[in-house]
Every structure is written in structure tokens, then in C-alpha cells.
Image: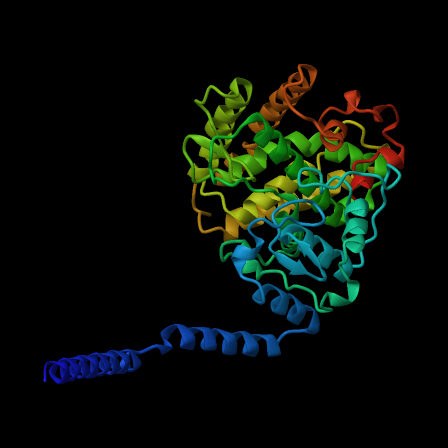
Length: 419
């Protein structure tokens, strides 16, 4: 009897355990388990829909990048320059910078020339120094021409570039388009720091200057007035304007800051920081004499672009040939007339007294600050405080550059360095 009772008790316990297990399984089955699955399915459907609308070159990129999670590229580097890779683009593991460079080269049919026997080092720091060697390396690492889609990227609408103000003047419109075209290069030329708006170091300052000078050369090559003059005059204009370009860009970029200059690589040069005393002195003058007046005059981007072109086409620049003097002077007069019409009749602040004259009065302090900047660069090179590349030498310190003895020679032109 005792044995039978024990067997009966064990049987009842087993029944209860089985019943409890079934209830737990049933409750789990009733839970909504589709949240993650549905989101994954929805994402896949969305990706498939978007992929159907893409060209074959883009489909390859999407399939490659979606097949691997973002975490899979955390420790993978670009096979061209060594920067952090963002995926497999056009057949090779690469960063967004090299991807964009290769795409633009193919679409716009660019051809580059290397001045150093096609043996240039291509890495994150020097990838913009020689485009021929960089493009050749892209091909060697597996990037394919046929993977690049044939249609061109559309330049952003001009009203998004110029804060909603569209000029009626054809010359100003041409200058704005030139500015827009060079902005396409910013993602490949400008290397941003990991920490936005951190305190700039000497390396950050020189890197930003190198990048801005590269963009300046590309901007000048788009200008019709620049194309019409001879090579000697082109070099003279670039050299005369290079330091002013650095001052003007830094000043306008910092128009919403009160105590620092915001550089293109997202670092800030504070005027009271002890790290770079000489550069801080320049930064303080930029803020007080250029940025603050720009802010007080409500300077917009059209006016900034026009004033930059006025400063660039300076007939008094040293080295301008006698044949091109009248062309440079005429171009400057035309820009001045268009600039004045815009300020007096189109600008929202056209009723501000003497605004046109005060905008032009920004030019003398920019020129004076640029001369101090050249002296600081010269001292930095003399004492080995900063790395000065060849383009900066040719533009800002032509008398100390390797090829300064024959400025009329086309091979020594800053333009040929970037073709």
C-alpha cells in the first residue's frame, strides 16, 4: 500500500509539472515575438525597394554594406589611404574620402599628372598631395571604373548654399556656382578631427591652412576671369591672395562665435589660449577686426563670395604681366559693380547707412592680418615648429620654395600640382 501511495504521489507531481510546463509554453507563445522580426523584415523590404530604384553601381555598394554590420568595419581600414573604412566601395575596402575621390575622377574624366615619378606616398595625411598616385592606387586595390554610376551628382540647390537669397546678377551667379563646385571637394580635402571644436594644436592649424589653400586653387581654376590670364598672372594672383583667403575664410566661418576662430577641420583657435601664442595673436585680430564687423554688418554669403573675388582679382598683385593687367582690373571693376548693386538694391539690409563702404573697409585689415600670418608661417618653418608642405611654400613663401627661381615655368606653378 505504501508503495502504491508513493507511486500515486509521484504521478500526481509529474502531472502538475507537465501541466505547469505547458502553461508556461502557452504563455510564451502568446507573447508578441514579432517586434524584432518585423523590424528586420521591414528594413529588408525597405532596402529592397530602395535598391530597385538604384543604378547597378549603387546596388553593389548597398549589397556590400548591408551584408555586413557597422561593427564589422570598426577595425578595418581603407586599403588606399589607411583611414577608417566605411565599407566596400566600387570593389575595394575604402573610406568615404577615397570613395568620393574615385567617383568624381571617373564621372568628370579627370586626368592627373605626378611630378615625382609616380612614387608618392598615399596615406591619410598625404592623400591629397598627389591625385595621380592616389587614383592609381585606387585601381590597384580593386576599384572598378564600371562600378561608378554614370549620372552626375547634382549640386545642392543654390538657395541652400546662399541662405535663401538668389541674385539676379549673372556675374554674382557665376561666382556662387564656382563656390558651390569647390564645396563638392570639401569631403575629400578636409579631414575633420575626432572631437569637434576642440582646442586647435599647431598641427591642426597647419593642416587647416593646407586644406584651405588646396580648395582655393580649385576655386580659382573655375573662375572665368582667371582662365583668361596667362600663367604668370595666375601664379601672381594665387600668391597674393593665399594668406588673405585663409584670413577671410576663418573670419566668415567664425561669424557665430565670439572668442575663437573656427577652422575648417572643426577645431577652434581661441584668442586667449597659451598653446600657440603667435597664432592666438592673429586669431584675436581676425575676431576683433574682421569677424565682429562682419557680424555687425549682417554680412551674408553672397557678399562674402563677392568680396573674396574682389580681393582675389587685385591688379596691384606683384608679378602680374603687363598683358594681363587690364583683364584683371576689368574683372575687379565688374565684380565691384555687381557687388554694389546687390548691397544697395537687393540685400535685406540695403537701408543700413554706408553699408557698402563699410563692407569694402574689411579689405585693408584682412590684408594687414594676412601679412602677419605670412610672417608667423615663416617663423614656424625657420624654427621647425610646423610642417609646411610644398603648396604652402609656393603660395605663401615663394622665395623659400624649392622652385621659386623660375616662377614663370609652368612646372612650378601651384596649379600644376593639382591637375
